[in-house]
Image 1 (tube, rainbow, N blue to C red):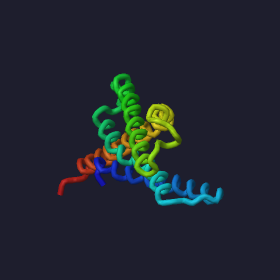
Image 2 (tube, rainbow, N blue to C red):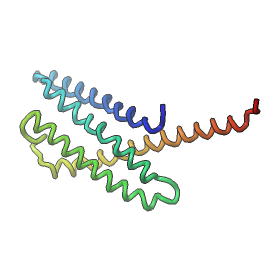
Image 3 (cartoon, helix red, strand yellow):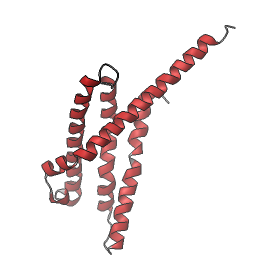
Image 4 (cartoon, rainbow, N blue to C red):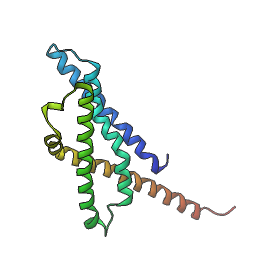
Length: 157
C-alpha cells in the first residue's frame, strides 16, 4: 500500500467508533425501554463518520505543513487553527445531520455552543489524525530508504 493512500484506512477506521456509538445508544435506549430507530442509528454513527470525511483534509495539511524540526514553531499554530476549522466543520456537519434526521438542533443547541463544546475533543482528534499521518509517512519513508540501501549493498549480477 502506498503512503498516499493510508488516509483511506484512517478514514475507514472511523467506522469503529461509529459502530460503538450506535451500539451504546441502542443499549442505553433499550435499558430505558425506549425505541431505537434507524434515525438514531444514522445520527449516532453518522456524527463519527463525518470526521472520516474530514480525514483527507487533515492528511493534506500534514504533508503541506509538516511538523518537522525547524518548522514546529511556524506550523503548530497553523495546525491549531486548522483544528478549530475542522471542529467547526464537524459541528456544522453534525447539526446538519441532526436537523435532517430530527428537524431540530442536537441537544437543543445552536452552532456556537456545540462548536465551542467540541474543542477539547475535536482538537485532540485532529492532532491524533495528524500523528497517524506523520507515523505512516515516516514508516513508508523508512522502508523506502531500507529498500534503496539493500539495492545499493547487493552485488551486481
